[in-house]
Image (cartoon, rainbow, N blue to C red; front, side):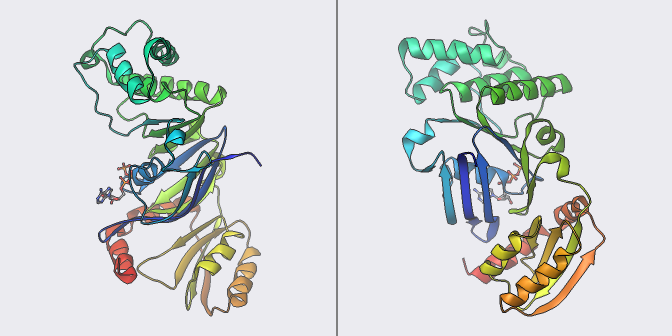
Length: 319
Ligand SMILES: Nc1ncnc2c1ncn2[C@@H]1O[C@H](COP(=O)(O)OP(=O)(O)OP(=O)(O)O)[C@@H](O)[C@H]1O
């Protein structure tokens, strides 16, 4: 298996009473374009900020490029384009890159050549002397990306890259990212647009209400699967771990602590699930198939009362 560039285990973020990120696990490999797909408020930006060391996790373990996020030399190998970057509109494009290059520790000739290289990559060569205040949205996205490429990153982290672009701008930006991927850069992309992740990503994690509800290749994300409602006496970490091995997706229901919804590929796996629950010493009260596909499950979860459920869970945790 190829080298992991991001490893996340048991990651939680609780803001006061609000559970923004709940027990997230995933691994992204070198050379991959990996997407987080979820609605507004799902917890995507919070996870990105934890990957970058900008937000402290409440619990969990993160390694980026093999190191903890506190490791500064490793942070220099990452490029980051935030969701709503605030550009210095009075700066010329060249000055903007000089400023950010200096923050990366670049100086002199090296900084000048990296700036030209980044401008060329994003198709803005010759615009060095133009003020950012006169840039279109598409050009601002590009200069933001140039800033993220100044340090020739191994890992590029993009939070909602294509917001505010017209269809041509979206297509150009996707093509640019595919080119960067071909050049060997690993790309982590947050998005609430299915089309973005489908066009760019090798694998996608669907996230809702702070939980990853499925990870897979985009083409298989919404194929018809079997959803099962399960009820047991107590859900333990060990039980969840064992169920992860046989299911495509697991969702807990914070407002209903004994309940789980899982996605399975084939009917026979329901029998395996019952066996795992018994082997774990848990009592099984309900194991019932839903008619819904994963997409339906996803939309259902989006519609559910997110804040109420999260508040209930955080009260149980006494955090
Ligand atoms: N600093 C903070 N303090 C309190 N709550 C926060 C803070 N940052 C984020 N949240 C909350 O955490 C939840 C997840 O927010 P987050 O920004 O991570 O979602 P997102 O998936 O990135 O959404 P979007 O697509 O709208 O950017 C939201 O309910 C948000 O209000």
